[in-house]
Image (cartoon, rainbow, N blue to C red; front, side, top):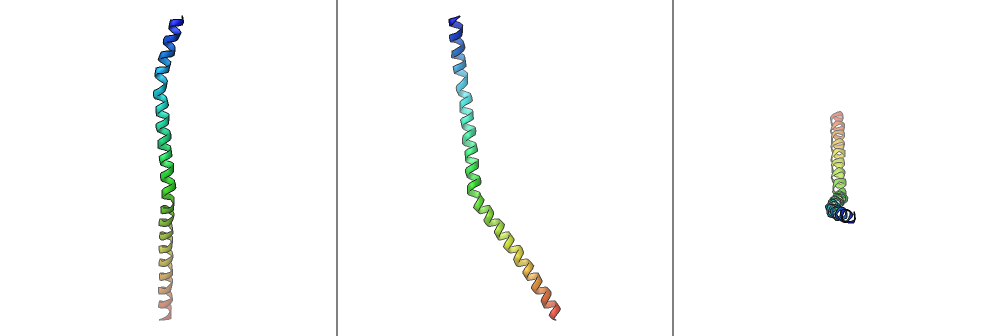
Length: 72
């Protein structure tokens, strides 16, 4: 009986470490994704601000052209 228990413990101990390594890899991958998201947020905000400014400039330009047409 003791021999079976010892064999079971050895097998269990041999099978557990690979699962632990996978979870560590998943944690590292999740951490990298989180860092990537935090780092790219300012660039995404800048791009959105540039696009908004361009749209605002286009609207202003169209409004000025409309005023010019009405004055002529």
